[in-house]
Image 1 (cartoon, rainbow, N blue to C red):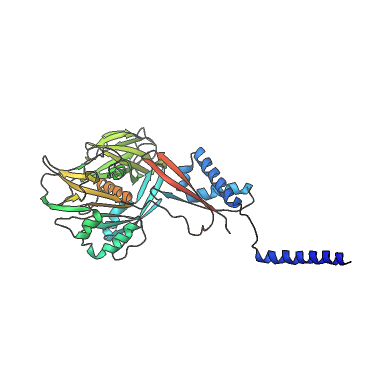
Image 2 (cartoon, one colour):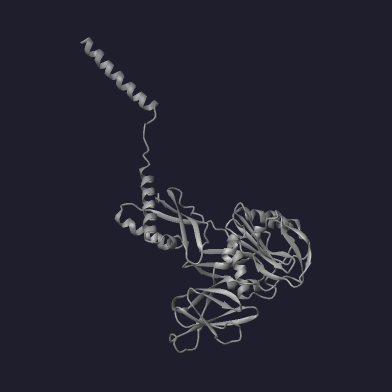
Length: 421
């Protein structure tokens, strides 16, 4: 009997000890991260499928179509996802341009508002701003010279966020120190504007700082809406037309059909030349390229492949040079038989992009000048999208996308997938 009691006491003590230990020691558990692994696999499958179907470039800029495509996969699954995406290194679908300028100058800038290249549309939205507090935007445009010293901290803050600054101002004497700091140039004297011709400097290789701006200047086309025109034998029943303005003359273009165009080559009003889609053509000794004829001929895009700009410098101007003597930062020069003077200077440092040139807006923008303005603005613009903040949990899968129709693009595409809770 005594032995039986001892066994019962031992069992009771063991139970008490086991219960006590369960309170003292923490629970042991293992996280298998299977839910995150499923998201990674799912994201990679989506990206691989899009690439195989040649849809990755298109969906990188069409978030609604991408979301619908992903959600269509989920009808075969028993879970719900929140998808999102971003790009880094490519022009955003909408570029916000803060402009320290007049309403009339914003109207001039509207010539650059729509871009169509590589089969996608980019829109520039312009908002007026002062320099005391620059609103959230992708690039700041300053038109006209002003002392930037009072705004130095704000300009530096703006640049540090990955945004760019482009200034169009007639500097005719030594500028303030903030100008020199922001645009990284030095004053070398004042020059008379005598018999100077503007020339685009073609970069020798991709390592030139001016290369990306040059690429946008030469290969990114200008956009023209068209209007109905008269009927013409051999053309579609409804032809359409638009006008290209440069060298103080207006050149008429008549779209005959989806591949053929008549145009006025010398500004005298006669349709004396023709070209076809995807071809180079000459107009007033300048070489251009017909990139697109849009659906139902409602728009046309042209790019400038070999072009000379008219002299828009003031009667006397400041000779500004890159502070680091880096000539690869010079995009356009004014030159005569003996001298060259920088007209467009660009600079990129730690994702901060700035460009300066003289005030090209003084006498209004023709289409060729609008092309230069457009190139500098989009080159300097912020090219990093942000993933929505509501995606607190989930996975981010990167993919490098390349595309080359009008110009070569390479950028990072990030697909984010998250569970709703």
